[in-house]
Image (tube, rainbow, N blue to C red; front, side, top):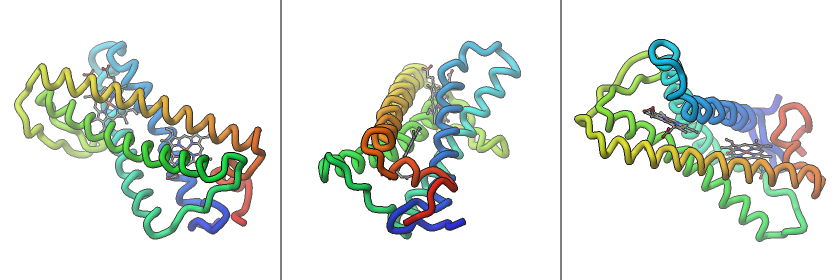
Length: 186
Ligand code: HEM
Ligand code: HEM
């Protein structure tokens, strides 16, 4: 197994972080969306803990993957009929996905603190809210958190759609080189 990216493909480190992040975003979004429908008490508390912990893991993986990108460049884009404008669009979408991941988590933490609630860090220890409860501010933060989270899901869906277009229409290696074990880096 090759951990580092090569000129023609992603290494295992980026692949694992990418797909684990996708799983965590899915879990966080589903629990955020249905969380209030869970029965009050243990089920809702557990849902909240998993929601927040998934968000925290997303943040840790995000720091790792941005750092990794700085020391180990991603492979160059596969050539497509869209040429350089297609490559630029993909770059902008990737940047926007990084920014949205960070923003959703940051505003999620602000939502928690604005409620005056402590933030559990992966269920291991708590960070007390530095703010006193402010209902209006908490409401606004929650709305922004939800909008950003939904925006992230919409953009990720477009991004996934683009990956499928690469695979089935352009028939290039873009999707395959993000899949473990399917193709060796060129
Ligand atoms: C450390 C990270 C995070 C924290 C601290 C956090 C915190 C919160 C809090 C406090 C709420 C309000 C719950 C309530 O009052 O019922 C919430 C709701 C929500 N969260 Fe998060 N969250 C985090 C990460 C995420 C992530 C990564 C996503 C999605 C990708 C997400 C999506 C949502 C959604 C869709 C809601 C429902 C909003 C609503 O009903 O208005 N959250 N989150
Ligand atoms: C929450 C969902 C997703 C997020 C946040 C996300 C984010 C990203 C980001 C930031 C990159 C740039 C490289 C990196 O840092 O890893 C990337 C690359 C990639 N993603 Fe996703 N992704 C998501 C879901 C998906 C899905 C569902 C698919 C497939 C159907 C997919 C396929 C790919 C492929 C093929 C690449 C490599 C693109 C290239 O080589 O230019 N992603 N993704």
